[in-house]
Picture 1 (tube, rainbow, N blue to C red):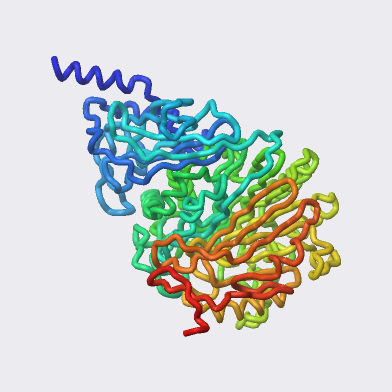
Picture 2: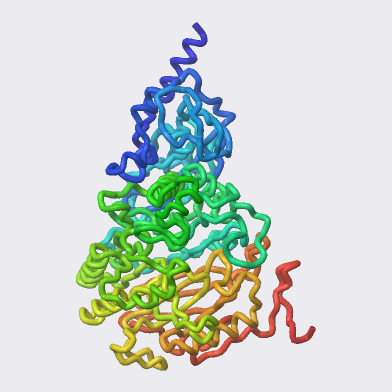
Length: 631
């Protein structure tokens, strides 16, 4: 009788728990059930009498929030009996173990769901409740939980927490913030912009610095959240003993889950997710902005650098096709990131616009996966160079490209002050011919320079429609680039004054991915190369190859201030950073304010300016700077 009463109490405690409100069971889209989980089958398998002991469960990877709307935000956590990721790659109706052929072992499928409750409050003490609920999770979704907190006020800070139902087992407290309504007159918004975090090449100190400073409202991430390579394969130089499990190139659903989980053990990344909502989407169901390495290197519509739907690559990669690998990557990413479901009736579409009051329209592009023509796959570089100017060649596909033009025009018509275009890859023309030892033109054909006609059409639309205040953002290159936006050979441009420019591009360095000239490059060599590159490109006003880091954008109606920060040592966990350079773009100017960066930067090469380091050197043993001229 006592056991029966306990059983009934257990059922009562979870009676209001929902399967469907855990968005990961239906992620990434209602239109792609093969990527989601059949809830009906999971419910049939449910056995409440064998539920987990609450004390044995752990919130293994903290909490996170993202995709903020004016009235709602996505909340995420993972609660599991162990840190190990689930091998439950399929949903079954029985309880028998499955054989995971990819990893050659039997894996069990969870018979018992875990009931998780959440609450959202307007105060840090978690007493002023504004939303709450109960949901289930299970091994089918790698024990992850993703819910939409609702009934929130625009541009307001909230706090949230998860807990195992009817227990004192609670997650850390998270903080988040909604966005303004599209028509709200907000006076200031600040963003931190990141890209390219390579786990074995350094600690993610850059993520934690904005937490320590509490300096922004939101985080914008431009791609390469993870790398799919085997440890040490990418970025020649000395990698740390930080092994991104599984220690091989990843292909299966389990592989991508495990790699994401490994990255989310870096405490600075955990802290950033816990304290800031990550904007990787828009106001109506946009998925994350990803670059190539969330799936595979130099991925494009029909393949990737090392996966080209050939028989050899199919056998080499364990019998996993290009499409299946993409599906595995997408499903794991949606399970692990605080992002909404999307309308994926248009082939993994991830491009949409995002309004932050009347101040900013954020236009996030997919210049990798959606519909781009073949890219540089290393073995076909000469061919790509020959067709780079072909008029039929597209970086985005015609549907996305025309959507972008309409969106930019509508943004200008509605009177948004700034148009911010998030592109994974560098837009500005960047020639490194003077440093190209192969005798080529030094262009990165995997960037916009490899799709010149597409770039020209974009510039034509901006110039011919007088669309002003354009701020392009880019990652991918593992270096910092700041340029006026110009239409080469079509519009006269004066690099001294900026006359002729239609906007500005801010391209940031990596969180930890190595410099494009090698992990072990010295500061002196890096600055020498930067000087050569900057001097070879009229529109490029600042370039730095040495520092890993990030930048902040502070928007007002009058101007945008961009502050670039370099991390002096990523081989140790620390909170150090160097203010490398500061830039201003004034409303209506469409160019960098002169003198650019105030005429002085800390590193790299500045056109018409100088680099001043004040003879200071960092002592990495104690984090203190000393005057090296006296040594």
